[in-house]
Amino acid sequence: MRIINIRPSRPTVVVLALLPFVAIFIAYTVASDIRLAANPADKLLPAPETVMETAGRLVTEADRRSGDILFWQDTWASLQRLLLGVGISSAIGLVFGLLIGLLPVARALLAQVVAVISMIPPLALLPILFIVFGLGELSKVVLIVIGTLPFLIRDLSQRVLEVPQELVVKAQTLGASTWVIAVRVALPQLMPRLIQAVRLSLGPAWLFLIAAEAIAADAGLGYRIFLVRRYLAMDVILTYVMWITLLAFLMDWALRSLSRRTFPWAEDGL
Amino acid sequence: MTYVRVENLFQSYGRRPIIERVNVDVAEGEFISIVGASGCGKSTFLRLMLAQETPTRGQISINGANPAREPGLDRGIVFQRYSVFPHLTVRDNIVAGESFRRGWGRFWGAERRAALARADETLARISLDHVADQYPATLSGGMQQRLAIAQALVAKPSVLLLDEPFGALDPGTRLQMHDFLTELRAQAAMTVFMVTHDLAEAFKLGDRVLVFDKVRWDPQDPNLHGATITYDFDARHGGIPFQTLKEKTNVPYPA
Ligand SMILES: Nc1ncnc2c1ncn2[C@@H]1O[C@H](COP(=O)(O)OP(=O)(O)OP(=O)(O)O)[C@@H](O)[C@H]1O
Ligand SMILES: [Mg+2]
Image (cartoon, rainbow over all chains, first blue to last red; front, side, top):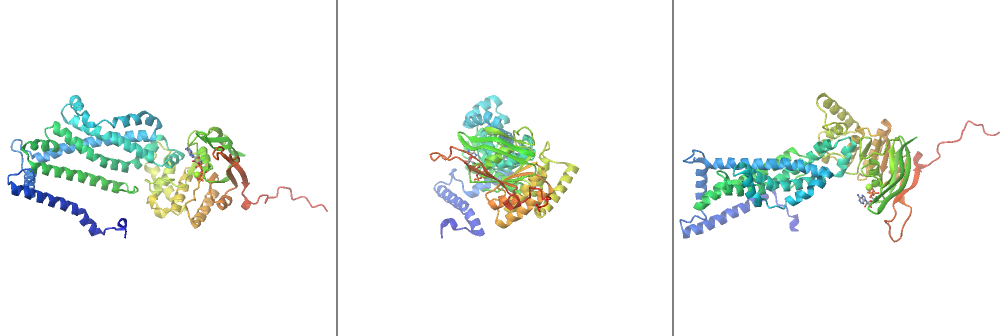
């Protein structure tokens, strides 16, 4: 039988999906064992138990100076920036996507400038943002917006253009105005694409968030990682990295199930 | 009485003429079938009727009005595909036929309830009431086209344009759709233009059958000339004309 025709059964799928995780864990454990056997004081690859211990301590013990649990404080600070940034970015992206996709005039005016702006590496703008918006929350949120917006606008306007012309003509023959076509034909068809696009933007959004926090912040997941790097606290870094990964994964999963639940008429992909 | 008047219509894309010198007068309530080879410009003709495109020359006027500049309520359309809104349920697709002309494209409150009730009646008439809450993607091709036709009719267009509406259906379903269309036309007389590749269908449903074809062929460049109406058949009485006596019959035979 050809390999393309071999379909794993349900239990096999679960086993196969878990396999890479188990393999990574085993590889790490072995590598860590080897290093610790050579030098028990090695900090680079702490034993999984040590990481677990540190993680337990981080999520429960309050900071001696402030009395807050820094782990949750960092999480909250980062999530706030991330969600605010991505939220603002999707709202603006949606409006511009509809404008560019639906109105030839807006397309003529904006499509090229968006294409050029999307070529600017957002991190190169970070110093400007710090100068203009200060070192506070605003500059970090703005970096996430700038970093994800051009992609969202281009992707969403492309999706609007992909709405079959037949449907737009049909709506006009039912007497729909431009506004009605926008809110009752294009927008509903765009919503599942928006969720798709936001899912794809979450990766860059985290990247820009952590970059901004690493450079100037007083709380946040990225800030903490770069802070403890000085003490080579690999156990703390690993805990944070796994936590960020888990958060990102949960967001992705939540968006996907939201899309499936809310837009049953749209066919879903990965 | 001329209702739709097409005068000296030309359409070219770039330097390539697609249709040329199309002249036709259509009376109110007539059913016009349009046939012709693939790519000869039948859909282009319908797009011009819709005012989705402007002709390079000539004009189309309906009921003596100025030529339309964009698609509007008076001309309904059913395409072969993508004719219903995939994100609306079957019932909402029918309601859209009435509500899209509103400021927000929807009805509220009592008006909405009344529109939903009317939609349910319409769906019962076209026997789609059992799938009212489903999305079009779950419907068969025949059901989707029935929905598309009903949706177009709810908006009460004066001219209905059909572009190969039954092209993707099996022969059995196609016959059902013929009956369905004939029934609808008995209820509300409207002028219909239907493009089809099925000659039998064209003659069965149409009052007239227009044939689009190229009259001039350039052996070096087949794209040099466009198509026009080469035949205009009277398709009433099964395509056999002169079934109605035109002379007075109350004259006694010469003895
Ligand atoms: N927007 C356009 N720009 C350039 N050429 C076009 C455009 N639309 C259609 N054409 C060309 O015009 C010709 C006629 O197209 P049209 O769709 O009207 O044919 P048709 O008679 O409906 O064919 P079919 O029976 O296959 O549907 C085709 O050769 C097509 O390539
Ligand atoms: Mg066609």
